[in-house]
Image (cartoon, rainbow, N blue to C red; front, side, top):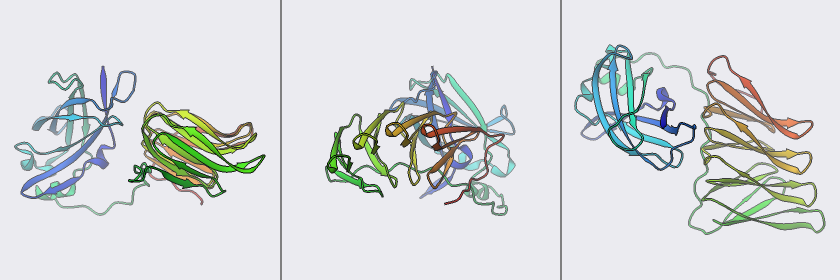
Length: 322
């Protein structure tokens, strides 16, 4: 069995103008199975209905679409191509969006969910006779997107602030840094999965693929070294502080930083949902979703560690020092 999770509905419903066509709304959702695993690169079919007044209100618009989830289990569609969408009187709300999904791509819509349209796109509201209200306050900073794919060159390079450099291609990475015997040396590491990119903090470098993350940093024995981590799903974002790096997907966060035993190391943290924002201050990182905040920073015993803080309600913003 599979299930669909609507992601940031109020934010992601945006109006778009198309030449000689009605306004549309962009809609995104993440599809998961019963084990909460992403359903990636799979065809699904969806029936979308707009309800007026309540979750069981009158259906004022319906359309069906066949789409394919991407590598992150995400589906992206434009709602509004059917007959009657441009006649909806958005000023006469509230309105609700009902999604019914067949994870096999047919018409047996076994998954259903309904959410209120808390924010109707301005262009649609104005077009149906409504008038805009005052401008609201600025929202919190969004999550950091992934680095783009490497360019046409077969190799990429990246460096940290303390003198480490990594050159990499689709199958291998070579780190150059401090060596306890010779002063400096190369350290080779093989890569698994499809290469996605590389990021660097002041002291560490991470090369990541669809299945693994590889950190290049301090090693208490050799001077520098590679540390690998298997990921449950491809990362959808990252955060960098002065000495630590965090990669995350909807299920887990992977922190790379100081380890008092080995020199550097990976630290995993289970997440209760996809992060909505983050902040990096000094060598500390905080990511958060609607219910929990997760801090990755210094630990006296281990060198680095995760801390969990449950939230009483979704945060309005996040702020910190440099």
